[in-house]
Amino acid sequence: MKKSMFAVMSSLAVMGLALAGCGGGQPAAKPAEQATQSGQSSSQPAPATTTKEPAKEQVLRWNLHSEPPTGDPGLAEDTTSAAIVKAVFDGLTRIGPSGKPEEAVAEKIEVSSDMKTYTFKLRDSKWSNGESVTAHDFEYAWKRALDPKTASNYAYQLYYIKNAEKANKGTGSLDDVGVKALDDKTLQVELTNPTPFFLELTAFQTYFPVNKKVVEADEKWAGEAKTHVGNGPFKMESWEHKSKMVLVKNDNYWDKDSVKLDKIEFSMVEDENTELSMFENGEIDWAGSPLSSLPTDAMPALKDSGKLQVKPVGATYWYKFNTEKPPFNNVKIRKAFAYAINRQILIDNVLQANQQPAMAAVPPTMGLNTDGYFKDNDQETAKKLLEEGMKELGLSKLPPIKLSYNTSEGHKKIAEAIQDQWRQNLGADVKLENQEWKVYLETMHEGNYQVGRLGWSGDFNDPINFLELFKEKDGGNNDTRWENPRFKELLNQSATESDPEKRQAILREAEQIMMDEMPIMPIYFYTHTWVKNDKVKGIFQDGLGAIDWKWASIE
Image (tube, rainbow, N blue to C red; front, side, top):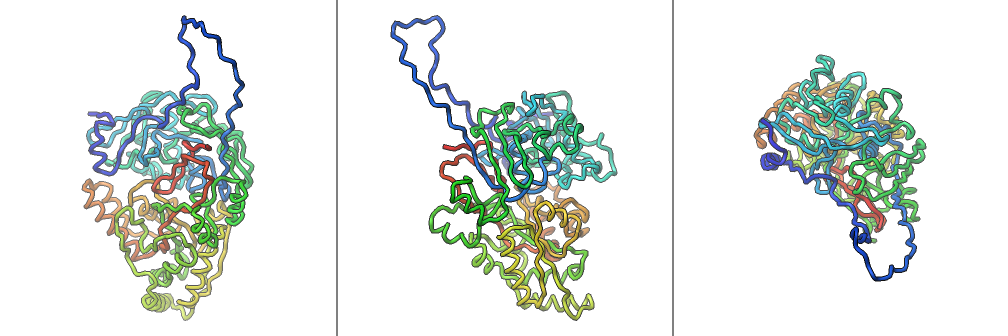
């Protein structure tokens, strides 16, 4: 038995999910002057005509900080690519300004009484090349992301769908995956278990459609503006790699009346000081988070001026340990390095943006453990663990340590501060290495590092999103190569536990295991900090830090 999506609203709300009203939010503007009704005459003389100036083009200027690695929703795994993909694609749902999923390409959503079958009725919508978007495009896109040949690091986000995990791991067939286009306008999805955040997932990039003909015509379709085809608020006009990108309003977008911007011009300047200077000189309209950062040295002055905008988000900044490379193949040494840093001093003296020290992987907003699992700056325990770990490895002296990060003045200053703390507190000889973002991601995924900077911004508002990264040793985003059978068992249990409190307890136990073995070193929970042109309105950042330009405008 199926219910209308709105008929099950109360039960979804209990589980932390609410679906907002139809459409993209803003009505079309009314015409300034209304025509006289047909057939009526008027004895009054016609008013003198005046020539109106054409409306000024609305152009948003933004710095991406780095080249987006891809414009393919099935392969996008970083915040820069995800932001661009969200601008040029639309899913079945979209997170609206309310922070909740709203219908997007799906006009109507029905859910079975057991909450395991979703039926999406699609509205009339088009690709940027004018072709119709169909349910078959969604089925193709999801199965493409799951196909092992695609090597999508985010394929696991589709594992909530029946038989999806088996297909991705090569132990099942893509034909058996629980997604099927019943006709051009109807998509049916079968889940393995009830998933209360599933409509948030359908707003995530891995669930976006792709145009099969476009994909199969050119394997590099998503890397050039001339071959890129999307179905979102904007479309690519140009992409000069490592230099600039231009998006323009997509007149084929189903909700184009809600899109006020005519164009977004992106630069790709890596240096935060240069970016801030560009903002102050009026060359860009926004500087800082979520796609870049502000110079830490500028924070006090920006605060004093009243220009600084600050927003806590559900995201964690951490260092990953390569658990297969000495000396971090020893859990005690990993914990020693994690305990030996003073996070609060780092925040007060380097970051200066009211971040919160992280002694857990999952942000406190998700409620697993707000106090953390260990003490910050625990020098005594750190030294004891280091001594024990070195003895277990037969080391009389720590080998040189390489700490890697992607090119950024902010990441550099954090790395330098931690380098100094490790030297003073553990006697470690730490060398720093930085790489351009795309190259850096490849280095991390290939395991060619000892300690490396990354972080995680939630894809949806549930602790599982932070924990499932480390479920599989060879998982797409598990660069640590760590795994634990009990940890995996608990995550599997959480998928079938319907009682919210019991599920939280299961996930808390799983996080405890991870913090006991420390494949990552949490450093701080993010706040986003930025400055913007006062004329810029309507840019939406959700509670997890993702940005959407759909409703933006320039006054």
